[in-house]
Each structure stands twice: as C-alpha cells, then as structure tokens.
Image 1 (cartoon, rainbow, N blue to C red):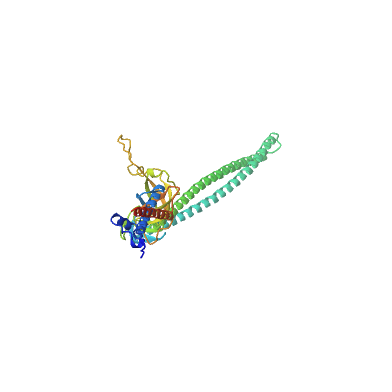
Image 2: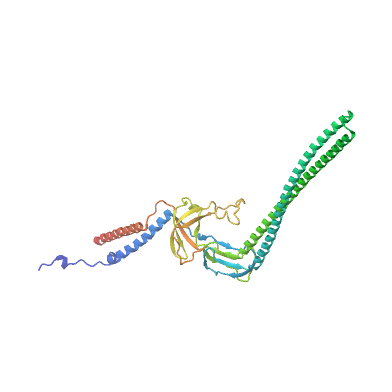
Length: 409
C-alpha cells in the first residue's frame, strides 16, 4: 500500500525559537498589536501636527469686565436687593440708601426756587414800570421842548416889537404908554422863554434819570433771573442726589464681592459690590519666541480646565509690549547685571462659540489655548487614516519577515 509522503511524514512541530516565532505570527496577536500601533501612531502624528503648526501655552486665563458699583452719595443703607453670585439684568435695583435727608434737601431747594421766582417776577414788574416811566419822561421832555420852541418864537416877536417901538418912540410916532406896553410884553416873553428852556432841561434830566433807573432795574432783573436759574440748578442737583439713593445695575451679569448689608453707613465712592458680565475672553501669555508667526485673525482652540472641553476661538490682538513692562514695578535693566529672560506677551483671544449657560465662566479661570500659526493643518480623520495605513503596512511587513524566517527553518 502506497502512502502519501506528505501525510505519512508530517513536518515536525517547531520547537524553541521557532515556536515563539510561530506564536508571534498568530492573527490573534498580530492584529491587536496592529491596532495598538495604529493608536500610538495617531497620537504621535497628531502631536507632531500640533507641534509644527500650533503654538500653545498654559499661562492663560479667562478675562472679562468687572464693573464696580459704588454710591455717589453718603448715607445709611436701607435695603440690599441682591445676593452673592445672583444674576441680574441691566437697570435692576441693587441697593437702596435712606432717602429722608435728600428728600428734605429737595423740598428746601424747591421752596428757595419759588422765592426766587417771586423775586424775579417783582423785578420784572419793576423793570416794566420803569420802562413806562421812561416813556412818560421822554414824552414830557418832548412837550417841554415844544413849549420852549414856542416861547422862543414869542420872545423873538416881542423883542422885534420892542425894537420897533423904541425906534418909533425916538421919532415920537407912538406914545410913551405904547412903548411901555411893548417893553413889558418883551420882558414877559423873554422870561417865559427862559422858563420854558429851564423846564425843557429839567424834563431832559428826568429822562436821563429814568434811563439810569431803568438800567438799574434791568440789572436787578438779570440778577434775579440768574438767582432763579441758580435755584433751579440747586433743585436739579438735589433731585439728582435723591435719585442716587437707589443704585441700579448698569449691565447684565453676576454679583460678586458683595460687601454691603442693610444698616451699613457708606461713603461716596466706597465699593459695595461688583458685576461680572457674561462676555469673557482669554488672555494668553505667550513667550516672545512663539510670536514669530502669530497674528490677529488666526484660528485657535481654548481648553477650559473647569469644563474639561475645548471651544473654537480666534486671535483678536497682540499687546504692544510685554506683561513685565506694564507691571507695577517694571524691570530696570540698566544696572550692569543683566540676565536675558524670555519675556511673555499677552495675546487676546475671543471665543467663536457660546459658552455653556449652565456653567459659570468668570475671570481668572485657567485655560490652555492653542493657536494655529501654520498654513497647513492636517484634519484628525487624515491623521487617523495615515496612522492606520502605516500600522497595517508595518503589520504586513512584520508577518512577511516572520514567514520568511519560519520557512527558512
């Protein structure tokens, strides 16, 4: 009976190193190892991509506006309408100061204003009366001037009659009685003319006196008007002080650093609480060596430690100077003991997507921004595809090498 040599004499089972190589060539070991290598390659390629095209720093914090609320007047706090960390809207009532003293001041200023108003009306009436008197004096002066002109004409006619009578008397044409009558008429006319001139001068002086009195009345009226306007200003100032007894929110935000309670006496400018609006941004202190390719408008991602997630953002601006230069005590390098230290420059980064409303994100929270400064950035799916391809090629190469080594034995 002929036996098949391949079945009659099976190849001997591998021993020693050959058995270990055979176990390494098992699909149950190769493919999980390939998957692990693919994962490692993915993270390695992703890190390499970030290293070559992104700049990152952990010296970065959330920043935002902090609006301090302080009174413009002094007084005792009547009520506090907000609590710590409470969200408030613009124009919400925050603190009330006792308005009693300021309400009394308003009443006093309003009474003084009414008095000044009455005084102004009196001055206006006196001024109008003086204007009437000036008009009357001017009319009387015109009448006196006309009377003086008429008396002048009469006096000139009487003088002419007297001169003719004197000439006729020398010629014995008229009697002594007629001459005496002409003389008496001339004397009376001259006296009347002089009296009319004096009266006209007196009336003109009365006009001058009325004008000066009118000017004084006008000045008093202006003074009374100025005092009345001042009283109105005092009323407005008192009403403004009264309005300051209620402190309102100037914007939407959360109450922080509240240090006021009902019954406290507060002074002008004393900080009572602060409001932190919802609008926040990131201030990242990059090393100066990281700014070579950084500029406004570049895309960025910001990882917030408190949320353990990232948000899309972009670079808004780069500060024109290092943070140390604008510190309270800037470094002085002109001492002769200079040591070069890498400086950090604040970079403002603005979020492109809204932050979650169910979490409070306020100034001071730590973040880690990553700014894309390179023109080429490989997407995650491309990185994953390359990692899988490389791991697959490596697995095939590894199996091919093992098979050759096993067949060689």
